[in-house]
Length: 70
Image: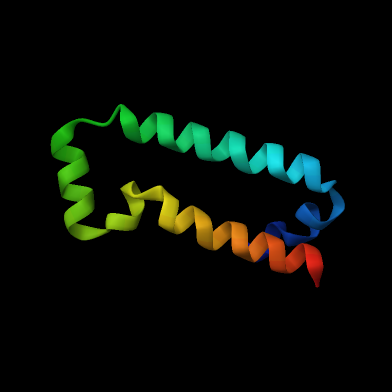
């Protein structure tokens, strides 16, 4: 998680956090879906989490949950 944004995330309602997270995930997924196949293959070879967003996204969601319940 970007620690610099943590104070802002803690000030918004959980429903807004959910909205922001889903909107960001959809935007990233949309962009990834439009990448040329050669770019996707090159990214997967070097940094698979860059394209396979669910793994990376789940880690951020866990961070947000911990921060909201701390």
